[in-house]
Amino acid sequence: IAMSTGKICCLVLLTLGVLAVAVTLVVILTQPRCAPQQYLHGAVAADTESCSLIGRNILKSGGTAVDAAIAGLICTSVMNPQSSGLGGGVIFTIYNASTGTVEVINARETVPRVFPHNLLSGCGAGFPIGPRWIGVPGELRGYEEAHKRHGRLPWKALFEPTIKLLSEPLVISPVLGKILHHPAFSEPGKNLCPLLCDGQRFLKLGETFRWQALQRTLQAVAEHGAAAFYEGEIGRALVEDVTKAGSSLSLEDLRAYKAEVSSALNITLNNHTKVFAPGPPMGGAVLMFILKVLEEYKFHKASLATPEEKVKTYHYIAEALKFGNMLRPHMSDPAFSEAQVPVGTLLSDQFAESVRQRIDNRGDHPLSHYSLLESLYKDKHRSMGTSHISVLAADGSAVSATSTINYPFGSFVYSNQTGIILNNELADFCIANRSIKPDEPVSLLPCLEPHGKNNISASALGEKPPSAMVPSILISKSGDMLVIGGAGGGWIISATTMVIINKLWFGYDLEDAISAPVMHTQGDSVLFEDSFSKEVRTGLLGKGHKEKKDKFAMNVVQGISKEGKCISAYSDKRKLGKSAGY
Image 1 (cartoon, rainbow, N blue to C red):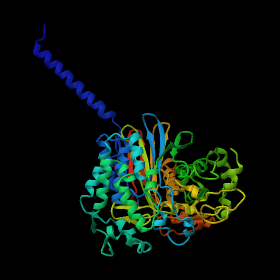
Image 2 (spheres, rainbow, N blue to C red):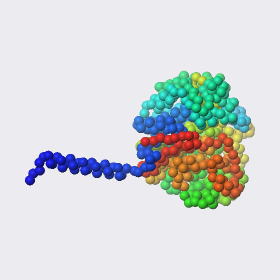
Image 3 (tube, one colour):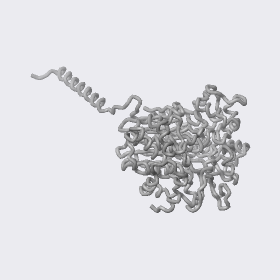
Image 4 (spheres, one colour):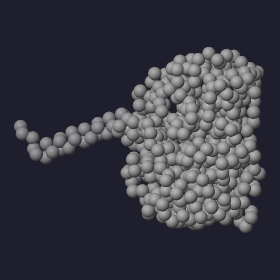
């Protein structure tokens, strides 16, 4: 008996309904089960929540990881002006998911054409701040190069959220207020009074200020590009202001500035995780060297299971940090150094093994024990004004970027016309050494010329000083990722290394990996964060380690991890940060 048309229609609709429900259930059941605080598409970890949200919104609007990083950094220069800004420099480590390549864009500050030739004789006389220490800013050229190579949204769109922020009064945050009122900065801080004072009184926590000069500058750069800064009216006004302050920075310096693009340095850990970071003069080679030395100890969760195991584990870490941090001042600009540290040798398995042979159960070795320069050449096989941002986009591309004006508030030179705070990046030469020779003692004072005077030679035009900055990206064979980097001057390498160890080997989740107290080394001494385990600290001192205090220490790490389909992001609470994602 033939079915009526109505019954056939009902049957078809019922079947389609059942299929729709089944498909929906399959989709729901096959969706990755991520924790409530995790994300499926992308995330941004910046210094502050407002800047993380700006970066997140750029991603949601179809922007790339680079677009989001630039927008987040522009915001950070306003929300944490003591850390970064247009008067500083930036370095990007960029992973392109479509090509599988990782490149570095280096837009750090450089030596200007004219500078005091006895500049570095002032390294030991208090803080090297003031107009003499200003390097040529590279921040905007770095943004421009990164956007040209990897951006998607219009350039102007990256500036608009921060320009809008500047339309309202800005509030003195706890972090900004703490630094502004630090006794060490009370005298030089007066130079910032046009921006951050009520008369001659520094603004207090919760008080507000307006930054209209910077708003006008950002508007001009948004409309006319980086050329407005390097070749236009902004540059002319900036040079006029800093010249009055006593700087030798010139329009020629600005016009000549170029960002550098190179492949990232990389190693493979545990035969399955690639680590990418910038090579010299950045700190990537030192970070990788420390990890290479430590990987053969096969750290895992049980390495922290008992008090005895904990002390032994952190002893090995402390010793590796001593060897690594002793090398940092010698990571000079390859284009200028007379005797570049052989990075290939430094990162070889054989060299890592030779260093492990020098690590025993003692922590009381003399300083000379940790100097590796002679071995490197024979073997043929202080700053805190920094900000970091990590970004992971929906297509799998990632950016780890660190921006700096060097010390908190850089040189303490403020350009009234442009609203820009200038860096004191030339102070980084105070821990550099251009002439490294195996047969002579190495000083931590910089640039020893044949006549023995501390100065920067005339051939240094355009040189970038050594830096601890290590914006890094780790990618496992399975595609899991860790996008990581830090701020905090000399502590950056130690803090970033310890977060990687916590996550990769100790099995911490991202928040715990970043929040865990850090130790750092200077010379043959160990420095501990205040909240570091007293038990481990006592155990290390019992092995002979010497403790040193650092009253200016502030290490901050921002990170994003992706495991399977789930993304975690964490902005360090040490700087009251908060991440954002979707």
